[in-house]
Image 1 (cartoon, rainbow, N blue to C red):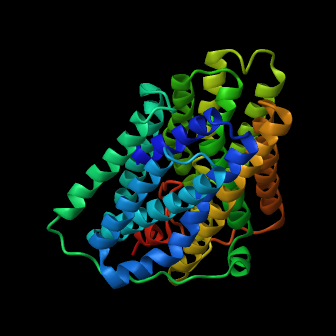
Image 2: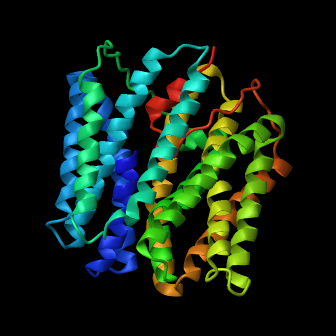
Length: 390
């Protein structure tokens, strides 16, 4: 996760240095979630054929190679291809880890195990973002460091004495069926995917457009990730006590207010404390919403429906993440730094409006009470099985 957070960040800065426009960078970065989606279908089959250890080793090696290719190519086509490849590999790495975790868990510790996994993922990604200032992105040092970190990640898997788990490919449900199960979850999952994709891949472009240094750009990214980590558990706990749709709508409303303040308050984007505070709140009230959307969907499903529906929601979220970097970079290109907050105003208004609409026009109809399990935005269909309680 440290290597992934660092690579995603330095690519944006390096792309700017070699002359890519904001729109081109958005299209390049959208390759990552595209590869992520493909891997959700293909990697489980590879694991069934070759086993967890071999697939993990192969994917890590390819991810390490794809990171280094960015040092020897200078066109958006090869960069986009490498981002697709990187997304495929990292998604596959998560699938291996998550199916392994699932095999080692039981009904007593699945929730706490997934929560710990979420913290490790988010913290690792945040540490990687903070490493941006260790070297100039145009130099080779950080790219080599990404490769070294990935190589080091092979060690515990290759020497592990644990028996490899079996792997069963999750069942799927269609998007239409998912919408019938929970319109709020499907619309919310897609919208939060757009928001998360913009926050992860476009924030570096925004930071550079307002004149932040390379190291400050990394810290701004880390602050938004930290906000998601800090508010994940409080918002999740609140959603266990009141209507989850109200929590989604309320969080989106706070995001809307923050974005309007960043646009309308003089000096909000040029004053460093206010800028960092704004992104802390933006990440805090945006990143946790996917977990709440999934929990809301699970509230309305029978146990035998959980894995299939949750797997589809993962893919809906990933589809939103494809759109996020593209829309965010285009708005930056067209409207300057304000474009990012304009995009978030639209997304937040969509979430808030959908939440209020569903509260007014539908019954809650909960199958049985289920507590929320915090999950990272990198979750794959395999990780949804860990959420299953007895």
